[in-house]
Amino acid sequence: MLYCFGGSVLSSLMLAEPPVALLAKSANILLASSVCGKHLRAEWEIRYLVFYCPQDIFYRCFAFLPLRLLVAGMKEVTRTWKITAGIEHADSHFKDAWLVMVAVGWARGAGGGLISNFEQLVRGVWKPETNELLKMSFPVKVTLVGAVLFTLQHSQYFPIARHNLVFLYTVFLVVSKVTMMLTRSATSPFGPFEATLGHMFFGLQKTPSKVKGEGAASSNGSSVCERSSEQHQDGVKKRQAKKTE
Image (cartoon, rainbow, N blue to C red):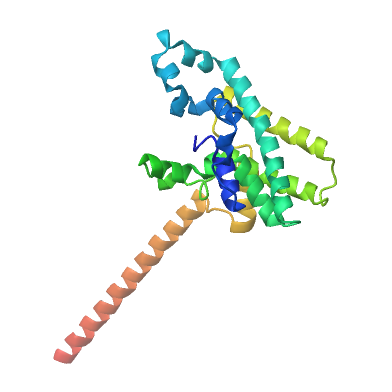
């Protein structure tokens, strides 16, 4: 439940609202129990059906690829209205506060990923290398982008109708998710843009040829220094021999 309602919990805490208010609606609990997704085996409400269903029929049904694609697409559709609902909710509390709207919309749409660190602590498993704030996954990244876009549109600084933006953003989410599932690829569609921005703002990485050239230059420099030191020692020895003579 903590993972399923991570967005609602985070946004409620950010807006000083009771985080357990979502449990007052039975529909939310039923929805979290039915929408399994990739965390199917982690849902305690349906653990009996997952682990004790005859012939493992329940899990096989949700492991069927077309059904998984359908559920994944529905999940991305709900991500869009979660972002927009979070932005409107934040705007009702803090008028025209861009950062608050972006933060609440981001938390509402990607709360499961953002609250994963706390969820790991609750389970007694701590993995700092999976910190979503340091190494964001694709859902967290695309939710942040969507929160910024919808905030600009809500503040009338983005010249596009809301329904058009919702449609385009949802199509991008669904197509990206389905493509990643079909190709079994974890590569983010933002990879080329991130690489380009990284080269622009943080410089190009050193090529192997340059590294080899620098290694050769350093080896040549070290050999020259060794030769000069040997010549200096020979000169000192000759001077001492002349003095003794």
